[in-house]
Amino acid sequence: MKTKTKYIFVTGGVISGVGKGIMAASIGAILKAKGLKVSMQKCDPYFNVDAGLLNPREHGECYVTQDGAETDLDLGHYERFLDEEMTSNSIWTSGKLYKRLIDDERAGKFGGHTVQLVPHVTGLIQQTFLDNAKHFGSDVHIVEIGGTIGDLEGSHFVEAIREFPTKVGRENCLYVHVCYVPWLSTSQEFKTKPAQNSLRDLREFGIIPDMVVARMDVDRRVVVPQVATKLATFCGVSEDSVVLMPDAKSVYEVPLNAVKGGVLAPLERFIDHGDPDMHVWEELVDHIESDPKETVKIGLVAKYIDNTDTYLSVTEALKAAAWKVGVKLEIDWISAEEATEADFSDVDGIVVPGGFGVRGVEGKIAAAKYCLEHNKPYLGLCLGLQTAVIAAARRGGIKKANSEEFDAPADANVVYIMEGQKGKESTGGTMRLGNYPAKLVKGSKMAEIYGTTDVVERHRHRYEVNQKFLKEIEKGGLVVSGASPDGKLVEFVEAPACDYFVATQGHPEYRSRPYRAHPLFEGLIRASRQR
Ligand code: GLN
Image 1 (cartoon, rainbow, N blue to C red):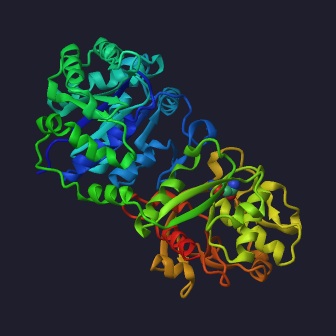
Image 2 (image 1 turned 180 degrees about the vertical axis):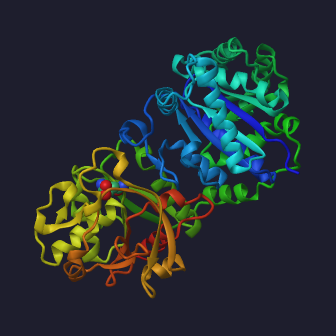
Image 3 (image 1 turned 45 degrees about the vertical axis):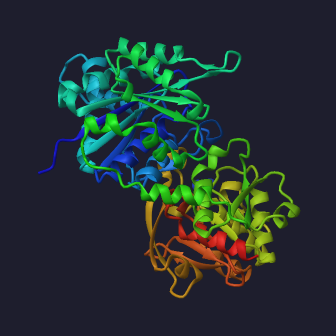
């Protein structure tokens, strides 16, 4: 019989951005390595209903789940660490929560009762925990609370997790508080006072954590016993429930560092399930730390080059591929607005990632044209497929070829909005989102790369290739190598004359894992290395 689900709640203190999400995901990875079924969710205080309309420069990448939710990049971390596919219910923002509640209130679902923060908002939050655990059949469900403790806008989530043990039993709940312990260089010491204060704030809500994770920016050897003792004394936890986490060179070291830092003792008191088998992480860290002689330089032709989080899954997918192939990866950020031929010739291979809006698009089309004409490895992702198709169509004689997104004339709209989609394109609602299947052409390069002709990739786009222009596109050097099963939508293209020129309407980067490179990225790195 299945044991009762256990819940882990991860809060943060002092400052944000110290890796609470990575720590939460690492705890998940460790529990999974013990053979437990683990799921995760994020509770984010902001009022946007989802991340679809958020500016990626400000907020980082919009991560798309298999069921088509436009979410925060944290869910990408969860998937990469847990190797589980999240769903639209894996993230609950305040906006989504209140929208649901207000919709229900307007629909008369509260039977005339007053709708209140407690128990209605907190109750709905708790229901999301129970629903997720049930959906995934979890032994352990981990909930990360966004922001830091004491943030006014996150208090409904904190109250919800405080109340939750009344529903499932305190013994089935573990509270983890991740806080920052700064180093004061003038007096050469760590200062635990801010962490103590954040733990006091947590106590004010009625939560005494079972585990305190102290993030510190100096190697643990220089540090620490005093820090652990002090935090334990002031926070009311046992000393072996304080986990000290120094900065890691790569986020993928965090699961191993957490084990070294002492995470197992408090975890094992909570759930006893044998030793974790960490070999996947050990092998990965070996790859990361190995120092290959060969370097492969990939040009990422992008609109935002000042916030690399905007393309986080793409860069993680490139890294995974480089680790697999055994080369050092150098990413050359090429500004799409200023790109020149010299930028393209300087790199071994090129990625044109997804994007929206006209800014920088001509630079991306130029990159595709350059790669077609110079047999340079090219991987086009979503918009990167569309720019490749535009470049080919122009070469094939349609001088004004463009996408309707960028005001293509009616006789040259090689990328367009299909009939059924027209007129409803104001918000995210009209996009093709989440998993879509495709049939690859037998004998194509694409089928060879994937090793199969039936593939599924996640999507997030509104425009499609206009098959009316296939002849010209082909004349320009590109053929369709995969389409939707009904043939209506172009999903993959490739250039038969080039060694590696491939593009997909999907976003394969979302399915790459650090320890399991995606074939399209691996292929790019291999082809780029050969040059
Ligand atoms: N802007 C393009 C479209 O909506 C591509 C989107 C993307 O690259 N994710 O079709």
